[in-house]
Image 1 (cartoon, rainbow, N blue to C red):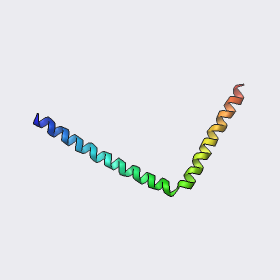
Image 2 (cartoon, rainbow, N blue to C red):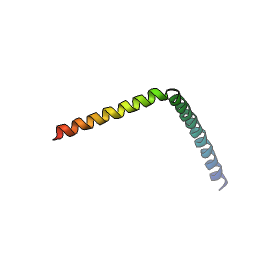
Image 3 (cartoon, rainbow, N blue to C red):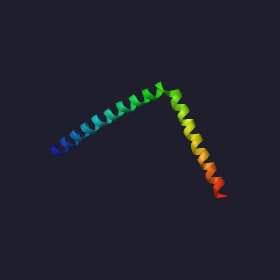
Image 4 (cartoon, helix red, strand yellow):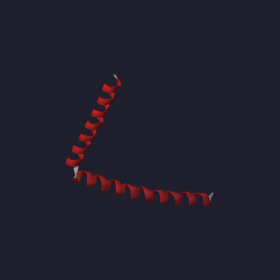
Length: 63
């Protein structure tokens, strides 16, 4: 019983460390995105526009 509890605590500590590291990485990405918010929004709109045009072309060619 004691050894299994100790093992569980060890694994929990390891997962908490990795999750905090990924969380910091995620935060850094969000900060980067905020810095380039205007260009990011522009590129996302452009990407949606390209996808929309492709869908329209497929519909027109399908008929």
